[in-house]
Image (cartoon, rainbow, N blue to C red; front, side):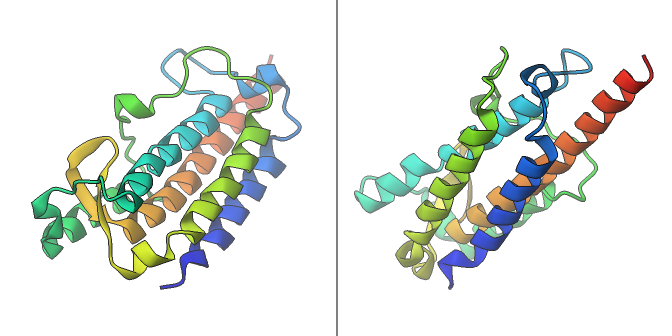
Length: 186
């Protein structure tokens, strides 16, 4: 198992976000068509929050303080949940999914340096993945940070993170296009 197989996708996603949104003002990054829709800045913040919720799990595994539910060791269960979650976060998935409360972005205006935070976060995430080679080789199974009943392999967790970022890039692009169209028509 190559631990760096996710790096090219993470780099591509980072570049996509940077190229698409680097020139936006803070007001444009925080623009929302309505209160129920996340802004581009909130989407980026959400990605950072979601990915970072996995870090304590990895730390607990390394410290031998992590408890994985026993049923997580049953192959078809962790494959079922892993496949279900991975399919639900694919960029091609049309159905919107409500996020768990722990992954909600900040409701207030996000700081202007959110893109720089994201770039830094992506480098950190690549480092975390790279340092997980031993855990990947052991086929480590973890629980979702949002719900201990949902279990999947660590490898699948990294697949989920990458697909999730791609899905939200698409969402952010659509939002930016809507913003641009709305302001062109006013």
